[in-house]
Image 1 (cartoon, rainbow, N blue to C red):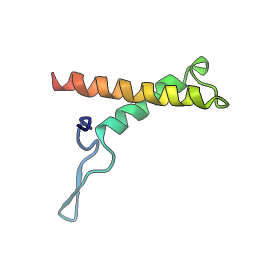
Image 2 (cartoon, rainbow, N blue to C red):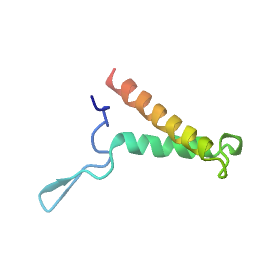
Image 3 (cartoon, rainbow, N blue to C red):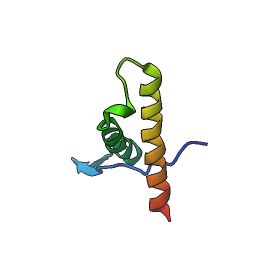
Image 4 (cartoon, rainbow, N blue to C red):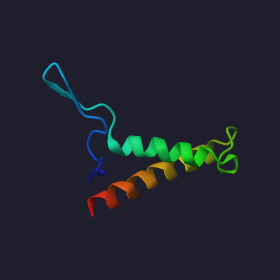
Amino acid sequence: MSKDNGGPAFPENWNGQQVSGMTLRDYFAAKALAWLAANPSMISARDSGAISYVVGAAYAVADAMILERAQ
């Protein structure tokens, strides 16, 4: 079972065809990642475990945002 990706973040028509671009889930995760990375204590560029944790946390926030939108 795949996660709900929220559909396209910025859908538009291009020569009569719908172009979807990035998913809303990816957009939300990117915004959450910026928020998490803005706190230097959250991540160390030298620690791949910390990086994986923060990226996972960004997608967890994105998934929660998509669930909240559905309610």
